[in-house]
Length: 246
Image (cartoon, rainbow, N blue to C red; front, side, top):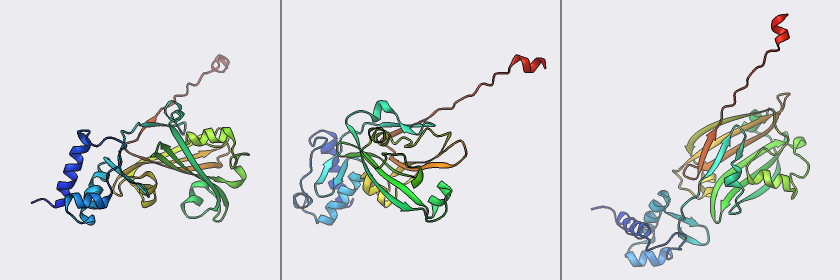
């Protein structure tokens, strides 16, 4: 006989997939559901946890459990280091930003090639569509390279934040390392995904013509909410005729 929480998850899943409970609708409180199914709240939470792991239900702290709305995917364009403007610039997608100054430590000293303790400008960005998070970014740059207005309400900087784009002047080179991996506890909490869910992780390092690291960005996207596109650029070398006749 299957555990009771499996039966509860099956029943709620059937109600969601058939439309009896609509996307965006708040489920009854855990206490009411536990009474309805004649189980303990511990058993009820196991059922809800299974639905959260499937992406059918999301728990919003202080508000309750809601049926997830279908996700609109966004696109990350590799090589340019930005979200695609056609998806990211839509009014429905907004970005919250927190900024601070932090000392360089551990992997940040390696990424930015700076001594330990060097002051860094840190920007923590979370993109949301309504209440649903789409992406998380932690962006770091040497404090002396932070462009004027980046800590203020500067429109150009806000536009860059809204697209997770490179914040400073156009870099000479962008190197991106991409992988899928399990989410960290902080990522799972911020993106409201299951603790066992995978994220698309991008580590982006931007350098100037002298090879100095201008910025390092650590991006994380839920795997079901983003497509990543990487474009290869080909350079054609033109030979001057005078060189061939010399």
